[in-house]
Length: 427
Ligand code: GDP
Ligand code: IMO
Ligand code: MG
Image (cartoon, rainbow, N blue to C red; front, side, top):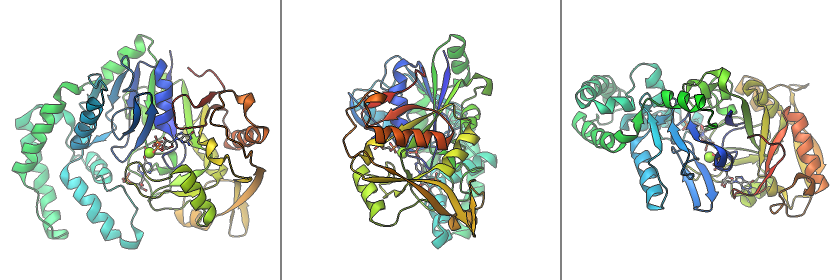
């Protein structure tokens, strides 16, 4: 049985939650490997509608183990809230396992996220203000606290003291805000630790064991490739790698064990927060897509910026992830559109280019070169077979596939689990 990575191919919110929930019916393990509660994954299944921030989207299947990997930063309050809500709605959360190496988001991370955003003023990144950047910065600076640390209360207290000795002078002297209280944070996090302790373990050995037993494992990406700190629109990125390669580091899985990498693409583009997006539509067409598709952030409720499918960015994403296939979501959003556009190249300073520039200054100047295709102007959400799709929809999919450079394995025509067209048997 293979390992399949499900990766956001654009700027996040491509529908990864829906695709993972659908594919997890045959899986035995689902692993979140990056990000934190900046992610918002919507799952609509027979149990209802769920918005998951930290819990993997396989949680709805009683035989699936769900792992929050070492590459995730965890706000324990958010995780406990999510687990509580799931339990109240009848979802069994006893198979949730949390890596003892995963770092914790501390109250000062959230504080710093907000303070730094305010300091950036007009150049704010538009983060989710969940403390993600500061938590990953501390991890790399070796000033982090990990879930495993909560299991040894005396050791935790000592470490927290050391770290607050570094953080409090910055809070008080640089930002002029109140220091964090050792006692309060310690007490609060000990309580979180007590709640989470039964779930915290060495998840890498679990994962290896599952693979050795031939179980199907899904790696559930968060965010999207164009938010990657190395390959995305830096500095308008997130702070951990949403790429397929990040799936190895963030879970403790060898790269040789990944069999398939599915890039999840929306039939158009969206972005939340700041940073360049060459195909953004600031006119009524952008508003039309947003309203038709209810493009509002799952985590922050912010309106998402909408635009046509960017095949230049898609090709880049395919290349840096090595997608073996694509899941194309939200095709139904275009059901009423008479004409559709696809960005096939950029115009930059008098030249036509077909690559995704590394510099945001260049990207801001890129003007999309569009190709137009006819729409299908008929509902498709009920369709389950590729050959039943209207010819214009098949043409649109075929063109995206050709331009993005990877075969389309799945087409999603609605938010529900079963509203999916399977083109190739990927499981
Ligand atoms: P994620 O972060 O990648 O999991 O995506 P989000 O959950 O943030 O946003 C995707 C949104 O699209 C959610 O509201 C889903 O319910 C919805 N969705 C997913 N696939 C489809 C689809 O094929 N059609 C429609 N209309 N909505 C979809
Ligand atoms: P899912 O998993 C869309 C964006 C934020 C901001 C930038 C940095 O649901 O696809 P951060 O809080 O990470 O420091 O913010 O990244 N961002 C997302 N956008 N979907 C997400 O997750 C995102 N996670 C972070 O809006 O622009
Ligand atoms: Mg989302």
